[in-house]
Image (tube, rainbow over the protein chains, first blue to last red):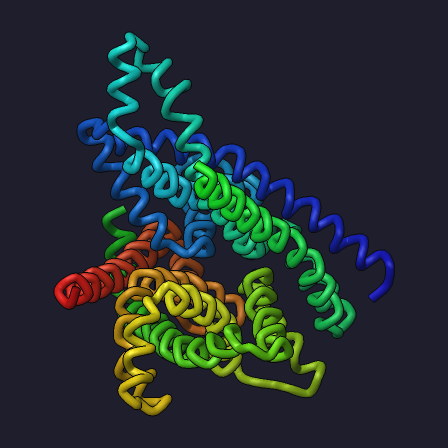
Length: 215
Length: 218
C-alpha cells in the first residue's frame, strides 16, 4: 500500500461524509414532518406513516438499497449508485428520526400548548415559538445517536458501487493482496468520526442533566 | 407484477432457507453476545483501572467501527495474520463479538440503575456470590433491560444482512440470487423486506410480553 492508495481511501472518506451529511440534512426535517403527521393524527396518513416507520426500521439498509437500485429503473426511474445511496439513507434515517421526534412530541406538556392557544397564537406560531425549540432540545441526544448509527451503516453503500471509504479499501486490498492494511486505515477514518458524534451525544446529555439539576 | 411474485413463490425454498439462516444466525449470536455481555459488564464496572480500562476500550472501539467493516476484517483481513475461517464461522464470530460490546454496555446501564437495597439485603442474608447474582440481581436486571435488549436483537437481525457480502446464504443473499437468476428485483427484495419486518414483529411481541411480566411482578 503506497501513498496514492491512502489518498484514495481519504477520497472515499469525503464521499462517505458528504453522503452522510446529505442524508442527515434531508432526513431530519422529513422525520419531523412524519412525526407531526402522526402526532396530529391526520386520518389515513398517520396510519401510513406508522406502517412506513415500522417496516423501514425493520429493513436492513443493504436490502433496501438493493431494492431501490435494481427495482426503480424497472419502473422508469433512472438510478445511479449515488442517487440510490441518498434515497436509501434518507428513507432509513427519516424513519428513525420520526420516532425520536415523536417521543419528544408525545412528552410535550399539554398545558403550554393550551396557554399559547389562550394568548391567541396561531397554529404556525405555536409550533415555531413554543413547541419546536423545546422538542429540539429534548430530541437532540437521540438525533445525534441516530447520526452516528447512520455513519456506521454507510459502508453498505459500497454494495451498490459507491466508492466510499469501504469500497476504496476493498479495492486496494484486492489489488495488493494485502487486505488488512487498507482496512485498518479505513477503521482509523471511521472511528474518529463516530467517536466525535458519540462524545457529542454524551456531552449534550451531561449538559442537559446539569441544567436540570440547577432548575 | 403478479407473475414476478409467482416466480418468487416458486423459489420459496431458497427464500425460506435464507430466512431460516438469518433466524439461526441472529439467535445464536444474540444468545452468545448476551452471555459475553455478562462477562463484559463486570469488567466495565471493575474497580481495577486496568480491567475496566481495557473493557472500555473494547466497548467504545466496537461502537465506533461500522459492522460491515468489522466483518470484512474478520473474513478478509485475518487470513493475512494466518487466521482463516469459513464464512459461517467468521460471520457468526463477527456478529457475536461486535454485539457483545453493545450488550455489555446495555447491561451495565441497567445494572447501575438497579436499586441497591435488595442486593445489600441479599448479602446480609448470606447469599453466595453466584446465588446472589442468579436470584437477586439477574431477574430484575433482565426484566428492566428487556426492551433495550430486544432493540439490540433487531439490530443483530439487520446486521446479519451485511453478511451477504461474505457470501453467507442468509435472507438478503437469497433474495439477491433470485433477482439475478430471474431479474425480478422488486418482487424478490420486497418479499425479503417483509420477511425481515415479520422477524422484527416477532421480537417486538416477545419484548412486550416480557414487559407485561415485569409489570405484573411490580
